[in-house]
Amino acid sequence: MKTVIHLVCLVLISMTTSCQSKTDKSKTSEVNRVEFAENISRKLLEAQKNGDYYKLTEEEATPTMINGLNEDLQKSSYSQIKSMFGDYQDLKFESLKIYPKNGESFDIYRFKGAFEKNKEVEVRAVLNKQGKLSGFFIKPWNDNL
Image (tube, rainbow, N blue to C red; front, side, top):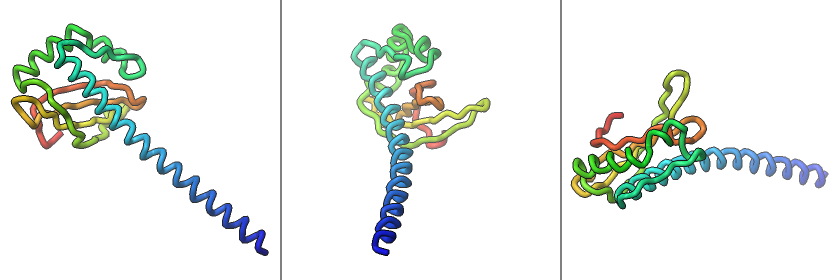
């Protein structure tokens, strides 16, 4: 009888651990995507602030973004950003919105960016289903998406 009770306890512990690890993995995945969106945003803005550019890779971004956010565009767009908001200083995660578009879904990560002239600038990183950067925007903050 004790063996059966021990066996049932082991099965219950195993099931509980299994369920917890699945939950933890999905939470970890969400956290990792937020961290990725934040890190890629920081890398792009810090490189631009330093007069350089951040070269996106195939692991990080879609081909459209790799081609679109090339060296020339990053340098010229940062001069516009700087004239509007001042130099980039920092950013902080604000919200995540999942947005369906044309049968696909995109995760929109919104960060409040701190810039020299303005402390409320939106830095928006959009990731596709594969977790790759598929959009990047800097604009005045608006509480509504």
